[in-house]
Image (tube, rainbow, N blue to C red; front, side):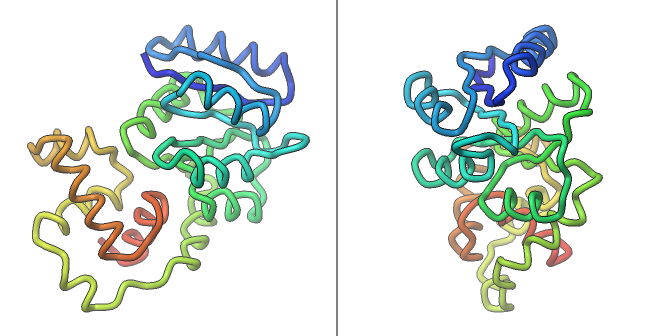
Length: 210
């Protein structure tokens, strides 16, 4: 079971999402929160594997929650789920390190798949906003040839998989590697390409055509 915290300022929507996700199977909503502040309290208390958050909320919105989680809970993926698809919102979410950005008309099955993917280290971006997300990668410095040359053959192979948005588990299965080995290669890519998180890494690698 994937433990998640569900964050939305509308109680009715939270209840609906909980029912849909738990019906999909494999997901345990361990806590709910009405805004980012409450979500941080729930995260500290329940230690979820994934946070699913609305973008627009009072007191602390989803983008600020992503930023706070990146700072205080590194490695905890946050998926933004919203009815809004403005360019600014997408850019801000991606730049702060959101592991996913999905619109609320996503199917329950697709949402459950996305939660599983980000839990395993993947990146999930709704195709309708993918172009904006890729352009948001402009904040990441381009890798220079020396940095690319510093990658080992194994690291470059893993880089191609990361650029495709695959999770560590999927990469391990595809390349017949231990999941821990994949994780080590991803850590090396983050360090060598001087990016702060996996979202930025995937976007940078996509821009480089890997």
